[in-house]
Length: 172
Image (cartoon, rainbow, N blue to C red; front, side, top):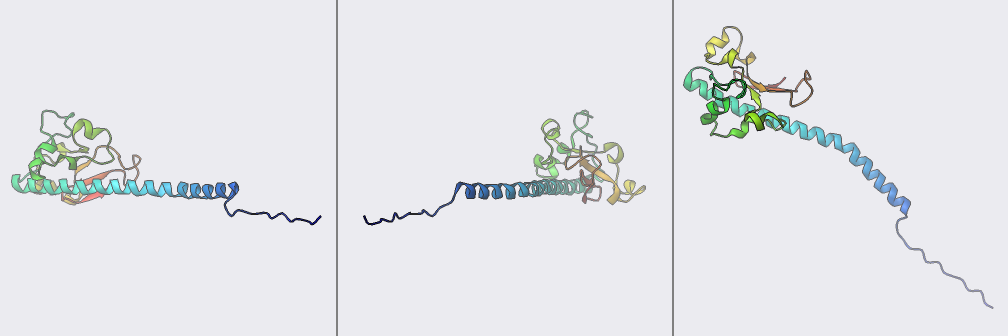
């Protein structure tokens, strides 16, 4: 009897082990990228908050140019309800765009108060620029600031954004 040689046909493909290793590597790369993506989103929200505060600062500068003094507005609408909110006072100077008064990282106060920023009315309300400059430069006087540390832990540098009386914004 002649010997027959059985031909073994091998398929070219991936084994289950190769597929599992590939999936594991992809999962590891995704896990390494997630913190970077999260940090980039946080930075974008912080930058949007700063941009919106700059717009409010421009509106406040226009208000002071017209009225010659800083507004007598509520610190927060619920804290001093007898006074108009800073949103309604500055609204005509910002095309009634109330969205700029909300920080993107604020998930609590904007929905209730209509504003994410606190206005130190007792320190600057009703005062002129020269009156504020008696004690400090306008670049050192807080005009509006995040009500809470929306951008990090309390005390952490950059956790709050601050609008100064001269119109510039800095993380604090």
